[in-house]
Amino acid sequence: MTTDEVAAYLRIKERKVYDLVKSGKIPCTRVTGKLLFPKPLIDLWVAAETTGGAGLSLAPRPLIAAGSHDPLLAWALGESGAGIATLFDGSLGGIERYIRREALFCGFHLPPEAIAAGAGGEQGGADGDGAPKLLADAEAAAGATVVIEWARRMQGLILPVGNPARVAGLRDLVERRLTVKLRQAEAGSRMLLEALLRRAGLAPNALQSADPIARTETDAAAAVAEGLSDAAFGVESAAKRFGLAFAPLAQERYDLAIDRRDYFEPPFQALLAFARTRRFQEEAQRLGGYDVAGLGRVVFNG
Image (cartoon, rainbow, N blue to C red):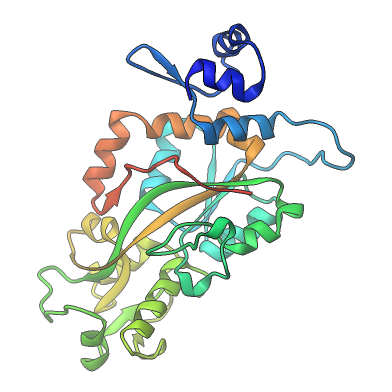
């Protein structure tokens, strides 16, 4: 929205809008010298500034990022100076921690098969939009939640250098009885793998697992690099880090869920500001398998 449009939307004078911009209190951007106000962020800002109501005051959340491990997010948190620690242990585990207010935000990616009907007419997962219904249902505990897109990632088979077994897909792994390093049951990557197996007409337990399970994308790729497993399922960036072969199978969206009020606080804003830098863009390209064109897009506003 333009300055006059946001003034009309908020029912305040245009001069007041300029005062809010000058004091840094209202979200805006400047394009070729012109102030613009993204409507989703204005709605979030209004919600975050809302006061009143008995029992709405909640203790601050710890500065922890929970949920699914993402190499780009882990790197950005360390480099941004946001002061947010990481506790990555799977999408579902992260959502549960977020609902219990044990994390500032959670990162997650879930295939449509793992999600009940989404809010706002959207579905979440590898090839859809939206947020899982459990976030919307849990707002009484979690607070007013907003979900933003972090990145689109390529998921597939992580294979030894040169792909000596000439693996092209999941059926090759099953028919040749190759060992596969699996993620924990709560991980979005594990759920996506099982969904892809079903879509291919294969049983979710058809793969020969290489124990123990891998807790992160990096652990899964390292097992292949060290010869402890014939293959793993994970993100392209993990394969590239170890110089391994990669067979792409699906593109997915990785989202971040955070309380509306915490969205505007300095720690999370520091992360988003860093994600807009050229350095971040270059790192996403270097890691491989990322599309960050939609980073920051609001996909759910409970």
